[in-house]
Image (cartoon, rainbow, N blue to C red; front, top):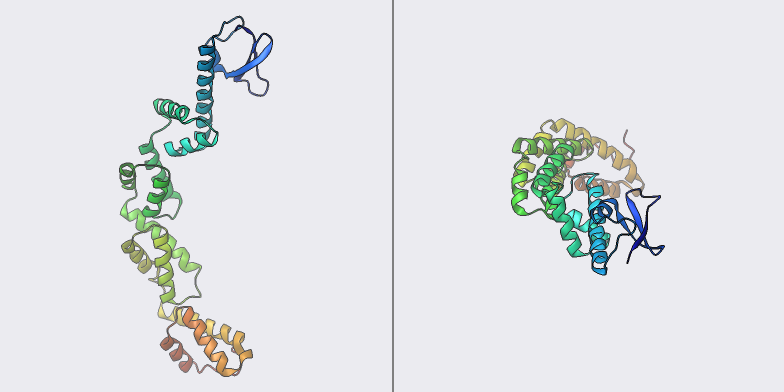
Length: 270
């Protein structure tokens, strides 16, 4: 078969349409066009046509991968998944990955280091959560362990304390015991070790005084009495104490406060 003409596409200037006997046959990337010298009167065999189309598929995959990488650094697994969604064949994906590696677009160890540094500088995630995310991105254990060395112990503690302090600031109506439990739970969920979570909890609650807790208890009692007065004195007392215990105040602390302040369940508290 002989190429009768070649024309540049209007919407994509990097691709060209190839015609045989005046009829459209296929389109190719400009790099493939130049590589195979696809110009007017060029004779093509069926084998050459198959090779050209295969090369063009790989070139399109390479372009898709580079566009995907333009937003941020990606792991090899992320790129493979992206190309698979574009319905590329596995052998074509393997070739694209090889070429990207040769072009220095893929380096999972470098990706792991960058990912760890980015997460520790911009998020409140602990090392275990970052580790889980890297596993999900297909990074091998050896690379993950090396990259996590970038997340120094002092930085981990600093980040954990910042997170714990934010939690304390948004939970000012809770008893200290409940706050301790909440801090430990959230820090562990964020991927910090038990030891580090405990240390961060202690630091974040250093300024949480007994007087502060007493003030919070008083505010909560007054609020709950106003809410529960409609049930009558006995029921009001019972529901108020139950709610306070659920907020982390011990029964003894509640009783002592009520006795000291002569809490009256028969009339609304100021």
